[in-house]
Image 1 (cartoon, rainbow, N blue to C red):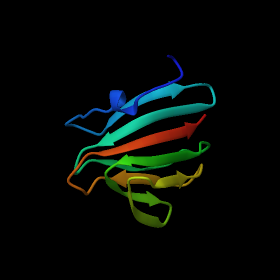
Image 2: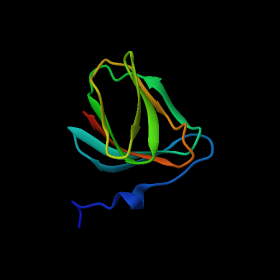
Image 3: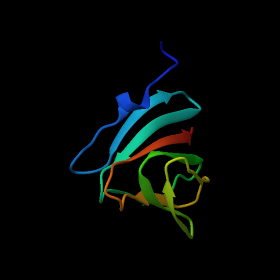
Image 4: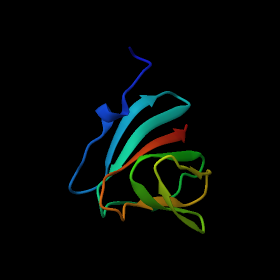
Length: 104
């Protein structure tokens, strides 16, 4: 089945930086997973012309979006509009799994 995915098949871990995998990609949207082990972070960065969202699948992350900071746990969606700085840190004791969508 090419249009259905189990997110658990796309999780992983790296010791040197957070783990990323792509679940689906088209010319309009990338949908993937970011997995951050405790202490790992995705540094604050910006996508000049791409909206982005994070959906917290597992764990808790401390998110930065522009001037806002928020500890988001399972079930929370975080929106990062194009041109706004954003990033996330796993300050918890469990893996943080994020479903990430980026407009192309």
